[in-house]
Length: 254
Image (cartoon, rainbow, N blue to C red):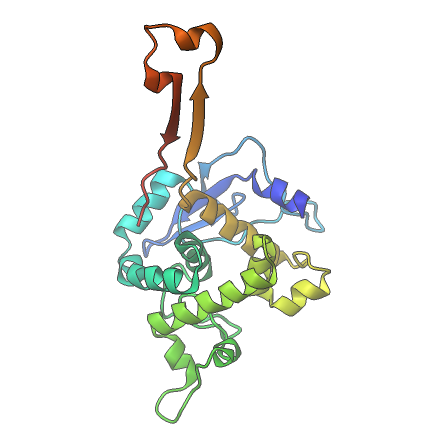
């Protein structure tokens, strides 16, 4: 798990904007459309294929460099339409707003109509069986898949599921995200580790990278005290001799 975290901290981000205005990103240049958006101090080796080439991170639909990321959320109509729902769910289910942002960006790129080949639906790509666990059932008028296409329903189910996974794996966000992608059973069968599935490992790295960029830094409190002769000098202000300075966090981006 420590190695996984160390690898996450060092990743190049490549990407391009398609003809629909959607950004796609990966950890290496997958083809000639990709340009380098961000470079860390070291390259991330996700894994090796049989041919010896580095495997790519799962492409995501938002940039992972702060200015570009901020711009995406400022101009994206699909994000603006649901951000109040993210606020509600984050508050109600005690899940970080920025974590929900990162999960949705990775899962669907904020496309409420997204449906995966496996049948996962909507913004947070909820499987119908998962929705039923949280009380969303289909009926004659509307099947569960159609109910999950509603952004409010989808976000609430996804936030509740993510909250329960965070409680199941306390202090181990990587495992909670791996369980969200592959199921909690897969994580437990792997010995409470991120399963050795390429998709899941790439998914966890992608969400954590986005979350790291989106989450404002925690304010740092620094206590400054001058002792000895300097503390008693008349030209030293009392507020400087003993003070607490708070370094403000960056402005939150919606």
